[in-house]
Image 1 (tube, each protein chain N blue to C red):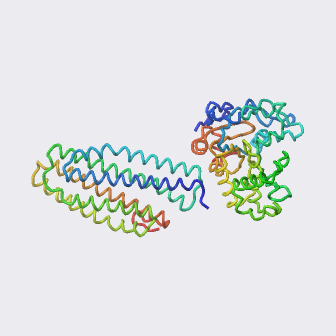
Image 2: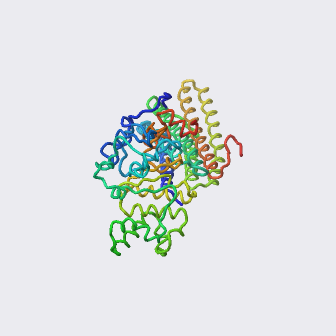
Image 3: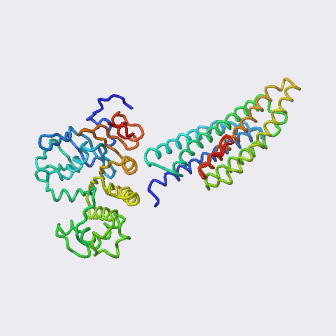
Length: 271
Length: 220
C-alpha cells in the first residue's frame, strides 16, 4: 500500500482495469457543479462493457452525481452544469443532437427506493415501449415475459401480470424496476443503491440478478455496502470529495489497494 | 439459495483433493523406489514436487480471494481457514516424499541398498491410508472418519520407534553401515511426519465439520 497521503491520482488511466478496446463509457476531463459548488473534479476514466463497475465512497463524494450525469438525470436540477464529456459507445451524452429520452432508453436506471408506477405489473414492464408507440400485443407479451424472466421475477408473478405492481414485496418491486429497465434493451444499467432498502434474501436475489445481467448489459452500481461491491462488481472506483482516488479491479481494491485513503475507507478507519 | 460464487468453494475443494492425491502418489512412489530399487521413480517424485507446490499457491490464492470478495461466514469461513492450513500440510507431505526420494536415490546409487528396511513399507501403507481417509473425511465432511485417522497415528509412531532402534543396533554392530542406517532413519522419520500431517488434516476436518478443536490433544 502506498502510504503517501497526497493520494489523488486523477490519472487512473495509468492503472485502469479497463482495456481501451473494451471501453463502453468514457469519462473525459469531467467536472460537475451545483451552481458554484464543484461536486466532481477532473474525472478521467473508462468503464468497460459487460462488466459490473462499482462506485464507492463516503456520502457526498460525488458517486451518485457522476452516476446521474451518465444519463443526464442532473439536467433536472436548477443550476447544475458541467465541463468535459461523457461518451457512450462513441456518442457524447451532452451532444446537442442527443435526445434525452432516447438517451435514457439506452441507459436504464434503478433507484434506491423502488418506484413502480401505480399500474399493473404488465404495464410497468412495457411502459417504455408504450411511450415509443409500440402497441402490438404479441410483441408486448413477449417483452413482458422476457424482461420478467431476465429479472428473475417471472415465476413469481406470471399468474398475476394484470394486478397492481404496488401489491408486490419490496424485493419484487425492485426486480420489477429492473425488468422495466431491461425491457428497453439498454446498453447500460445504472443502479443507485439498489439494495439498501431490502432484506438479505431480497438483496441476495438482486445480487444474483446483477451477476446474470452482466452477460448482456454494462452495469454501474453505487453502493455503500462494501461487501456488496466486493461480491458483485468486477471493477471498483473509490471517490472522495469529488475526486477519483483509485480505480482498479475489485480484487485489487479490496485485497491490496494502492492508495492510503482507499485502504482507510474500506477497512472502516476513515475519518 | 445457492449463490453464484458458491461454485468457487467447490473448485477450491476439488483442488485440495487433487493436491492430496498427488501428494499421496508421491509418497507411494518414493517408498516404491526404495523397495523396488528404481532410481527413475525417485527422480519422478523429485521432479513432480513443483506441481504440488503450485497447487498450494493456487489454493491459498483462491481462498484469499474468496475471503476478500465474498464475506464468508460460518461453515464457509471454516472451510477456507481449513483449506489454507490443509494445503500447507499437503505441501509438507510432498516435501517429505521428495526427501525420501533424495535419500533413496543416494542409497541406491551408492550401495545398491542391501539389508533390511524393517517397517518402512508398513509405515508407507499406514501413512497413505491415513492420508486417504483424511481426504475422504474432508470430501464427505465425515468427522467419524477423521477421528479414525487420529487413532492410527500411534501405530506409525511405534513403527518409527522400532525402526530407529533396529537401525541404531545395526550401525553399532557395523560402523561401515552408519551412513546407510542414518539415511533410513531419516526416511522412517519422514514417513512418521507424513502420518502427522495426515493427522493434522483429520483434525482440521473435525474442526470444519463440528467446530471442535482436537489439536494438541485438546478437545474444545
